[in-house]
Length: 83
Image (cartoon, rainbow, N blue to C red; front, side, top):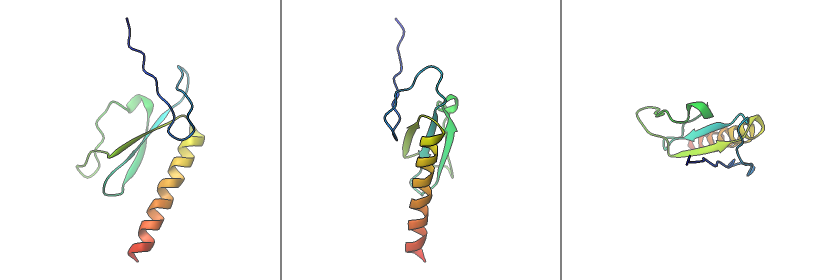
């Protein structure tokens, strides 16, 4: 019996199917973030020697765009508090 992986988009709640083009968004404790394709999700991703603190499943370009905007807004808010 094969193990079936079920993934849900953390932005919209969609369920992953065989042909979807999914992405993974990673954030880091120091404030950095990046996105990689679903096919690359099993690789260890480190930025500045740190492992990611969160992993977000994203079902396509629309949800990638929403997630990216949230990260940019967070960075902007953080930079405004530092100035």
